[in-house]
Image (cartoon, rainbow, N blue to C red; front, side):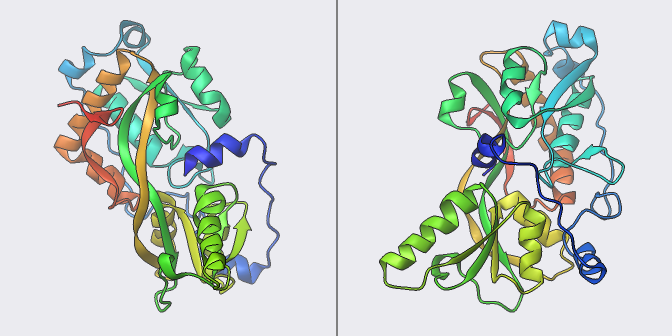
Length: 306
C-alpha cells in the first residue's frame, strides 16, 4: 500500500525513464499509460454547491483565507498524477476539490515529497494531506484521519488466464518497487510456496505501476499485483487486455490526515458525508474506475461521524 511505498520513497532514486520502440509505445498507449490528457473517458468536473451549515464548521483561519491547501505527491495514478500539460489530476484531487466546494473554499494543491506532507500538516504549511495515505494506529498518535476509501491488494491478469493469488506458485508476477505488493504480498506468497516444496513465484519489479501492468499485456508476466485502486485503474485503461483476478484482500482505510484534535476533521467529514448523500462521491469515484472500495459513510479514525 501507499504507506509502505511512500515511507521508503525518499530512499529510492527517481523513476527510470524507459526507452522503448515506437511499436511498443503505440501498444502501451492503448493499454494503461497516461494519454489524451490522462483523464478517463467521460470524465466531468463535479463542483457541488456550498452548504452553509458545513461552511460554518470550517476553522476561522481557513475560512478567512477563502482557500484550503492540500499536500500531495504524484505520481500514484489514479490517486494523483500529472497530465500531459503538467496539471495534477486524479481521484484524490477531484474529491478534495469537491469537499472544498461544499465548504465554500478554493482548493490549493501543493506538490510535496511524501515524507514532508505530514510535517507540513503539523507546521500549518498545508491544511491536510491528500495522497493515498493509509490510516493506521501509529499515524493516529499524531494525526486524525478522515476516511474516504477502503483499499487493499488486488491482482489482475489477461482475460484467458486462470489466475488465483492463493495458488500462484511458479507464476511470474509484476509489481511496483517497494509497494506492499513487492515487500509483502508476492514475497510472502513465494516463501510459502518454497516452504511447501512448490516452485517459487518469479517476482518482476518495476519502477512504476503502469510498467508492471504492461508487463502482463506484453506477455512478460502472468499477473500484476498492486493496491486495489491502482489495479482498477490499470484495468480501466487496458482496453480489456487485463481484468481483475480475485477479490481485494488486506483492506485498510485511505484517509486525509489533519492535525490531531483539529476542528478541520469534522468539517471535512461533514463535507464528505454530504457528497455521499448526494451521490457526487460515487460519481467521482466511479469515473476513475473505483466501483469497489467506496465508503458508505464518512468516518474519522475508522469511526462513523453519524
